[in-house]
Length: 408
Image (tube, rainbow, N blue to C red; front, side):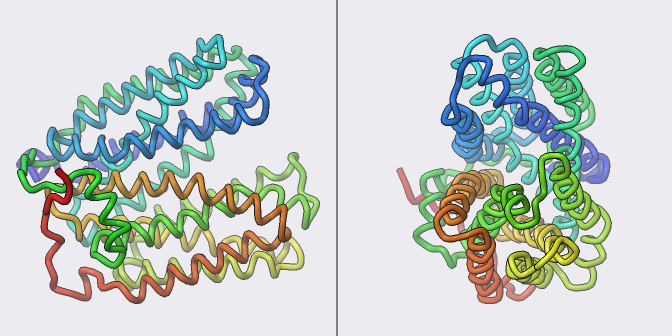
């Protein structure tokens, strides 16, 4: 950590980072609900609409490790600023897109800019002591959840009031404003390291598959598999509620708002005391257990009165599992590869975001309404067992993995 980061204090930096992820998610969700309508204006079918969503995820998961590697080499601050500028260009072009191909190009640019989330997490790793890291990451994800809640409302209102150009221009303006404040208020956090023995991106990706029980790979798998189960639920929640309880488009929003509110409260208010009481490793295991029980309870709930508390277990579990597993990953990673490895984690998150909804939809159609939730419970049972089998920094005095190149 540089002297600047030490002297300026993490709290001010954390507020700037929270504003960054909040604006990022507001921009993403301003655009996302409007995509089908914009695509239909260019006579696009359902496949094109789906590909527009996948294009963003693909650009994000491919760019994340490279953003992370560059941040390890050149510093976090310039990469965060570059990602914000890329997002601003993507949203600006989105506002003026006059063809389906340009719409695809804007989604690529937006996903490319959003690939810096691992760099933001690495900044937290540089600036916050290990014992406080999970709390800080919880605050970041709380800001992201708030952005997810507000984005769709802002986008629809802007489009209705000022036309199709307004949402993209507003999102671009937010990003540029964020660039200004980040440039003014966000000092560099990391020492620029040029290690000759740094592992390549291909090597980092290969390690996750080749040595799944290694210190860093185990945390990536815990995060990615839990995310896949969570994204599977998110994908079919609306049609699940429609088929089982007759929920319509007029009231489905209340369920998402409720889950989002529980998530924000957990991460911003309750996560800190939980970590103080149980520590990161136990909180991670408790989170995995809560998600498992939630996925088991949801299909067993006979009515909405019991469905709501069953669903509550999911945001409670994710609020404990995701920030703690990411924090533990930063503590296990070699000091000169934190950004790169967090980028690898985000790539696996992107893969989970593609695979989870895909198999959930197939299982929903072929086996039954309850089947995706039960399959998510099976996945989370395996994750829970895995969390008890891996040693964490709180339970071992072992050092992080050595930085060894595994590819030319």
